[in-house]
Image (cartoon, rainbow, N blue to C red; front, side, top):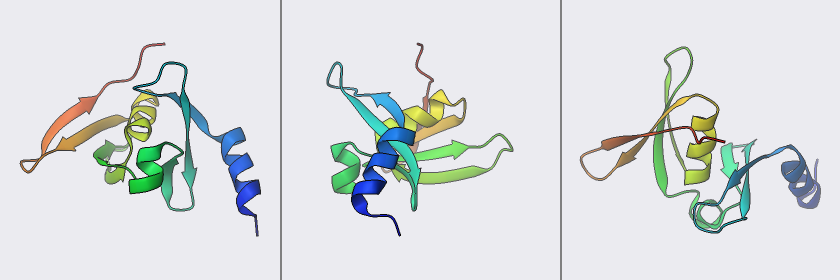
Length: 100
């Protein structure tokens, strides 16, 4: 079994960096963990993410996930179709890949 300290190191080494949306120069690490997509940002660590997404895979399969905006942006950057669901009426907004 891997210790928490070892797991943290593996996440930093193998995770994917996503820029903070609010703090210039700050990056968060997005990774696929034991329970699905995870991030080391405060929103994910304290609330398991406060955003709801529908991710459409290459084969057309739709998957709903609750996560932070860094995970949603990372998935969109991977050329997956990602929609964020808002409000009581389920309004959907497409997440566009970031230009580098």
